Length: 140
Image (cartoon, rainbow, N blue to C red):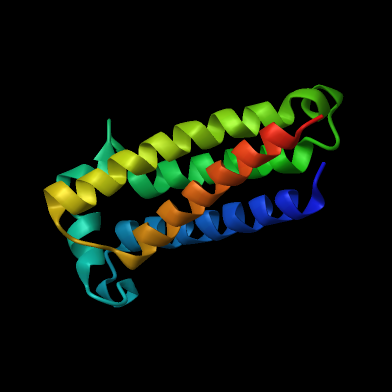
């Protein structure tokens, strides 16, 4: 296993998880002081697209990033995951990547507002997916 790819994956997952937690707190508390930059965070977080089937998008992000983090941390320790963990991280990354594509479409075409925190989590998930693809290709 390439340690650099593994560590980079961990770093981007942790960044995505932290920012998702931040955005979940912002959405739950509705504290406008937490919205930095352009102020579009408020537009995005209060849009009708900020929930999917009753679940807040930041909470979905927390669940997704936490799941990938758990998989990365366990793939060296659990025999089944030593063999299949890279493929499972790829699968979760693919689902996250497709969700991010939808979120980017919503922000750019429907809401026309750009939240720097949302963009940070989107970039993090895209990079996690790219690293998962590379790890899968390089897997012996």
